[in-house]
Image 1 (tube, rainbow, N blue to C red):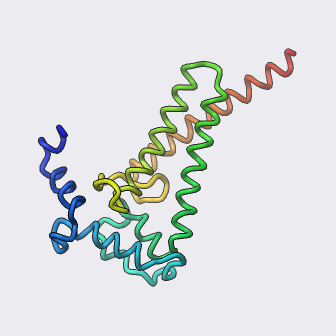
Image 2 (image 1 turned 90 degrees about the horizontal axis):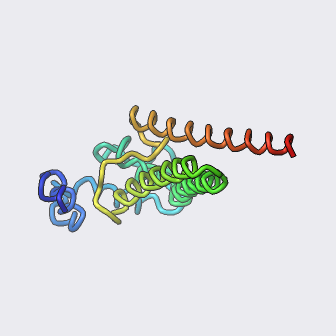
Length: 174
């Protein structure tokens, strides 16, 4: 609510989210083109380079999920979501296996950040929530997004290695 009151671009995104069809050539252009692309792709898509993702502004960053849905189809888009869900579940499994509360909270927090980023991206593209401009991890174009996602995966991998080393030490001691 505070961001809505303070920033004009947030008000624009919320009004485009509430009714993108009211100003389809203006504020609602990006979200309506996204919905058209998702609907056009159907379950099996139009094929690589057969869609028109360039009609969506900033498609390679914010709305890559629409381009995937249009060209590769809903089934492939669901597979991308399942891969993201699988990564999140792996993060949570690693978090649950950590004995130190500090490491457990780090893994849980980083996994939560990852899945929230996926939710914000896909939710904004499908008009479930207002568009946020957040990229889809390891799919969208964006240097800082890729770097931060690699850092998250690296920290989680380090925690996994730490846990594995602890288990090996316990096995040799016992």
